[in-house]
Image 1 (tube, rainbow, N blue to C red):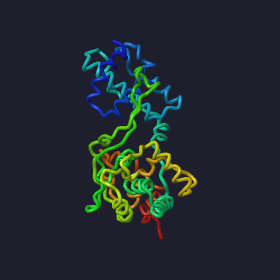
Image 2: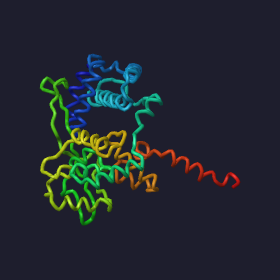
Image 3: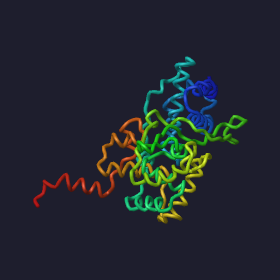
Length: 318
């Protein structure tokens, strides 16, 4: 049985198991990367000796390790499905890929704003109140993902208990077009459940931004979206464009980092101020503490210097 035929059997099963955004990601990976290489190959012939060189070629061509790992995940799911559900004698995909350390390091590097830049962003947003500036302020003071922020409505904000309920996310979905490919993809906005089970969470409202939140809440209906203060939402790609302009043209920083860097800045700042990792992980909505440590917590140069000096201060004579 060819891999393309296995895929046709597999995709309806996944459609019942995963979110639409996850499903379309699988479809794009298969159609754009896997099918051109292996679609016409008998699935029994696919094994580690064939797949590993393929992934190395993709990395040598500039593809990120994360993307290559996503491709591997889809391939393994297809092989497992062929083996268990279609009863095809494939090689069990239990092996692990050893990624080149230089690429892995580059893939996991996430930028952050310095404390001075952080302060400048917050001060500008407070001094120049608008729905979109409020959205940026909430993001950098809560660690919300951009899709969670765009889906946030005023009914999700509890001014009595001073919390924000992250209970949905807004995404632009790219689905195969009428021809079954992504050459002319269909696209639509979907508001669905958060990324993971732990992503449905309550985040405390920072007391310093509570007054400005109360001012907007007083003039907005419960069903209005926080980032627009209207019944119409904004979407991540539109909000990212505004965010870039906000950083470079309004706050006038000499550089900007991706919107997700606000989340990274928030998490790292809490850790550097001695907030325990478990608490930070819960606020961020991570499934486990390891994710918080590995992806979002990187000590600054000053923190590392202070750690060395403090740890070894009793070794040397004063």
